[in-house]
Amino acid sequence: MNELPGRDCPIDKAVWQLKQVCKYLPQRPISLWDSEYGCAPFILKSANIPADKLIRLRSNLCLWTAPPAYSGKGRPRLHGSKFKLNDSTTWTAAIETQELEHPQLGQLRISLWSNLHFQTAPHQPMQLIRVERIDQLYSSKMRAPLWLIWIGQEMPPLDEIWQLYLRRFGVDHWYRLAKQRLHWTLPKLSTPKQCERWSDLMPIITWELWLAREIVQDRPLPWQKRLTKLTPGRVAQIGTPTSSPKLRGKSPGWETGQQRVLRTRYPIVKKAFSRTKKKTKT
Image 1 (cartoon, rainbow, N blue to C red):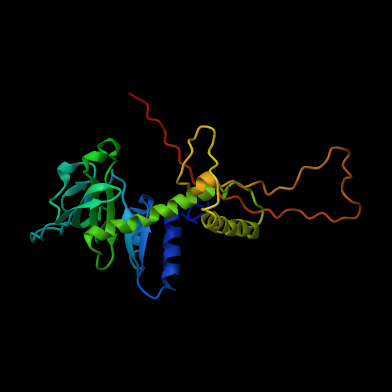
Image 2 (cartoon, helix red, strand yellow):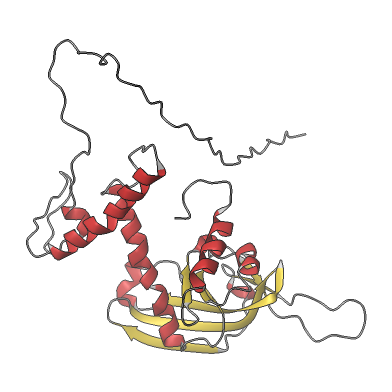
């Protein structure tokens, strides 16, 4: 629930949640993180948590290689050469490269670089992984390569580790279904108890849709084509939780002697917003 507004930034919340989860796990887990957490602050704050991390990176980031050996003069260097993800001229030679055939994605090339780091986290080495589609059959649908970093103990084999991140897409699509089609964030509820009850209904509704997948019917929007292989978003349709409208006429009003209970007011949490000033041309 890192997207809920609060006084702490999403990175601090994610670090706190990961720390709490690892307390109750019998073994060291492998955690998957989106590109929002592919940054030096998250790496530094989660360094002491006993969990391996597989994180997606944005393609416009810049990493640094390991520094050269100490020359004996001056301060030891912290960084080596620059490694820009979107500039192949700055790349060093990969220590391992594999090509494999995927039944759905076609031919893939997977490359591995070791001992890279962020500029503000020079003492946190990472393994960099690049997944690229090279099959000519998918040339019309080619997308940007997938960049991943591994931080932890022994890394799984190169042909398996990138498939671990694919499990995250199922989670992301579930959040999209819950928000857009099941209206998870639409109701403006008053109490935390009501919010928890409404959130508990989301996985229950999802399981009911999955169990009824053999008997449901397609409900396309007017501009959509019918599908034979249905998805939860094409069959999910819920009503409104409000009561039925009352009949027209004069309202009886508030009953005499009935006590009025004011709604509890909570402080408003506002996120910081900085507006950059435009520079005037001289």
